[in-house]
Image 1: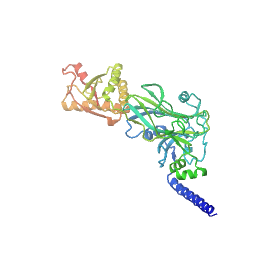
Image 2 (image 1 turned 180 degrees about the vertical axis):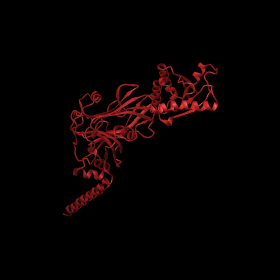
Image 3 (image 1 turned 135 degrees about the vertical axis):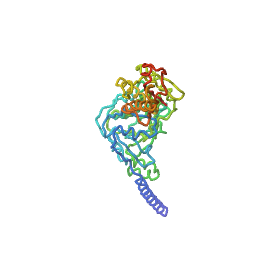
Image 4 (image 1 turned 30 degrees about the vertical axis):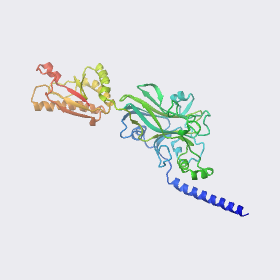
Length: 424
């Protein structure tokens, strides 16, 4: 009899403790706000302002988005239990549904947009509700990388059930003749998906996200990390923070396509979180001047106004951009080759350029200095109009102090009236 009373009191005390612990837990969890979703940025801003850091070593151009705009946005959370706390999120449904708590086992939105052929080739299955963010980029080293986490409402009940939502990060360019996926299970060539990372397969990369409901209250009370994750995010499971990386050739153009789509059906959503400011060119730095010489040689093959001269750590491009006597007006015949030069110079976006203006020997030294500076300035202004950053350029006049030909024939004087380029 006494034992029964004691047991009842112990059980009652246990229930009070669990309730109190859960009450305190809820206060703790709700002090860590859920995921905040924002959809106020253009695709270009998403890449240049969110994905890239201020010192990324990467130049981005030609940003393109395909899919429904409700499926992409930025996010942040103060929770330390989410693999990635801030960045870009792409989903096969509505990004607003990413926010927790995880109160439903099967959240989904049928967007009814087209699939993605590269994802279909990867998964060998039909896709739908595809979302892609694509851009051209130029790295300044021989490696690029960024961080991401994949999550899905198809966890855990639809693992190995043929509805394996797909995502990939495809790179194409030098060394990648066909679009190549770089979102891989660490240490393998296997693409990341619910079938390839889950509680039974590659489980070290998997994070469970239990339902936020009464049945799981006791579990959350003693497993705060699980509870905080459940309160923050709707997806039923996710990967840990993973790294995507690729070997590249510095200053060559590449196309990166971030893609996600439904596979098998379009009922339940999946998403991929990409860490803010994590896309970086972080490999070995190679000598710029060595890299650019080949491209300059190709430029010279198509234009007879440039010739190359290497001097220690600089490259001097001697030009046949000539000026009429006593004039600093840039002739239109030089526009096309200069535009080609600008394209190359913008590709090698960390190189700097010094423009050197020259004159013939007619006139005073002071006048020739001013005239030669104006000639260099005329080319400088043209390069500015072609999108070359003014912070990468400077120009000076050299007068007639450095003639190509020292004789005083008219032909030599014409050749001496020129502008040269020094790259460093």
